[in-house]
Image 1 (cartoon, chains in turn yellow, green):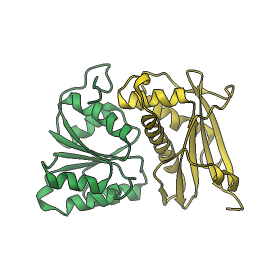
Image 2 (spheres, each protein chain N blue to C red):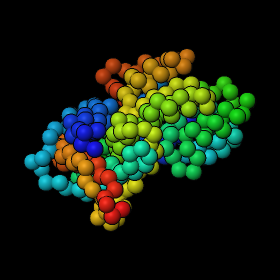
Image 3 (cartoon, each protein chain N blue to C red):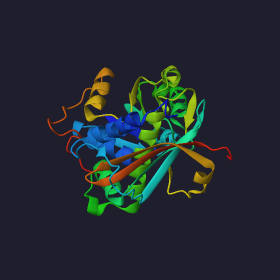
Length: 149
Length: 137
């Protein structure tokens, strides 16, 4: 997997989301110095010639900013359901674009938000990219089924 | 012009609304394909449908196929708006009857350019205002 999609590519894909939908919010920066605060978490599953999942997590501050821009509403007025919906779209776009550079054909699931994490015990972490927006963390992980899955 | 935005993400529907409404486009929304068909059947028939691919109940490809099976709706332009960028799937959507294809993430300028390619000309997006200055309605 690391050979198929590099950490640099994952970072570029995530930045592309930021540049397109949050053009005034400033660029993402490397975030390995930040604690991985993962208040909101979602994933999309990929099945086919390559199988696994793409998971995106972030702090509530990042999630609220994304939702605020996408809903055109001040962050203070954003409801929890809006935060989940916006992060779902972030996961969908990042995961979908990662899927596009994996071996085809594959299918993409709809976003799965705040799911229980038991699946992680049977999964193998392939790549992890730590990013930051305004000193708030964003983590993108790519997982493949482990030997026990 | 009346546009129907079909996407299971309320955030994405809102984002597209913020781009299109300042261009003078009226918007109706559906969260998946079956609801979109119901919306069109209840009228009026939109001039444009912006259709996500990955949705529950009825996905975007099924929706395009269904919309194109109705001759009375043939005048409706259909633009896929999706992360799905496998060449084979893009061809499938176009063969099913989609007229244009826009890959997420997109900019407001890209949406306007695609509308122009469809012959759907709208007001110009104000300079420096990538989402047209629209607010949620």
